[in-house]
Length: 353
Image 1 (cartoon, rainbow, N blue to C red):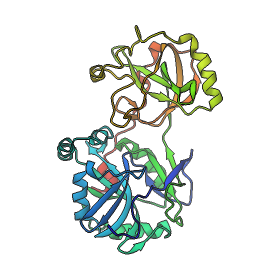
Image 2 (cartoon, rainbow, N blue to C red):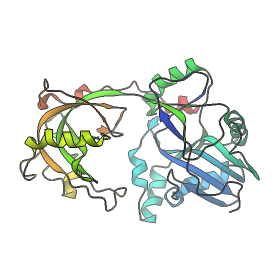
Image 3 (cartoon, one colour):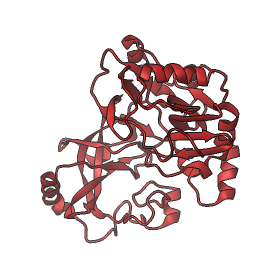
Image 4 (cartoon, rainbow, N blue to C red):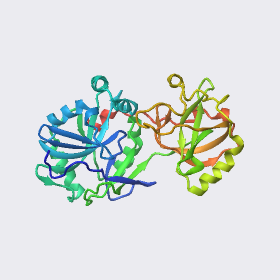
């Protein structure tokens, strides 16, 4: 492979904002695997956000790139799986599998798509220093004949349209809106874009904690919601505390600490088969590898209000944010019924298919 921009390349990143800024170019925020795609003739390499190769996990996309991309190019985009007219993230996680036979089976049963939103190089020319508006025009020309499963992300410079997308597209499984300066060159691994994501709140039961890597202070709080049968299901974690607050939380929660998991709703957390019927912390994962997933059980008696962006199935898609304790709420009242569901929106309307 001999391209003007060579792997690995870390993608350009975004910083969070509460409102969609004006005077920018806007795109939907896709919920998948960020990927930098390199093609030089028959040679194709797919790099992850960290620069590690994803190529072997998506053989159907390698074929699609050879059929749909210019012979020599580098693109930035998102690998997604579309099911029932919306994005689904769980099937993507299943694709990261050590067995080639399993990968190829899933490539046939749950094939991935690629949504391109930037062009870093074309033929012998690097576009890294080219303003985004020009890179975007070049991307449109480069992919004008591309077909499913390769798409070009919709873009607009109309602030009102971006606000409408922010409301509508969530129903198709998208994650918010990204804003880019039209004069911006490509800046790998720098947070120079702006992302605006949905934020909602939920009252959750605090049922455990994990220790911080630095010592005996809170690393994260384990959150639960009661399902229709009254069983407490693990829905995610709350983290990102200042170090002083981590120590304070450890002191606050010490009276709830249990000597063991015996009698706890998640007592079977270490048993792999138990995860088939219930959500609890410590589920086996190819992503966590040898990471210590042990946790400290707490009596599930305290309620915490957290902010979250959206759900992935029956759990929070991303780490939730601490808002406040809710001493006025009983743990039994913290159910899935409180969660807001976005109005569904067909992803085909987003991609123009």
